Length: 135
Image 1 (spheres, helix red, strand yellow):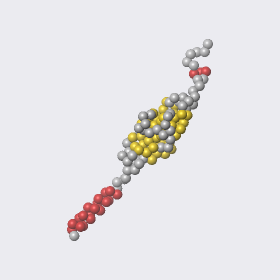
Image 2: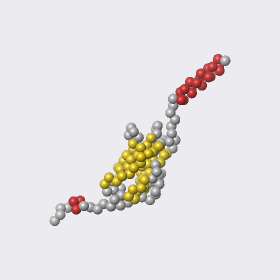
Image 3: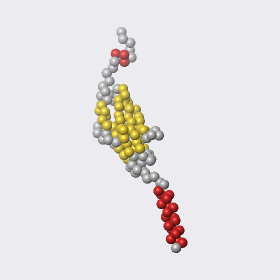
Image 4: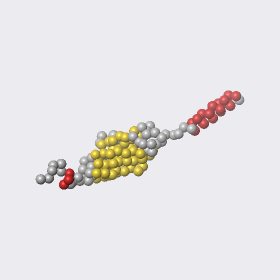
């Protein structure tokens, strides 16, 4: 009888300890955005939530509509702020269509955002952009 009580006590203690552990889940990516702030300069941002994120960033491509971190195209890794906000600024080619996908990885796996498409503007120099003085 003592052994049953002892085993039951150990089991209950184990269950209490396990119930205090939070389960790790796949990261969740939301509010993904890509905005051109000036010709060929693109600000990207997303919110990435998880108990743990080991690696995160954005991949971008002019060829693939769904680039991945392993596709050997453009990639920018980053860190998250305290609110899970990822942001970066990319300098890209003008008048070009890009596809952006955000990713976040932990030991469970890699979460990917829906692709975002953005075409950078055509840079047309203004008269004041000439570095040489006008005659």
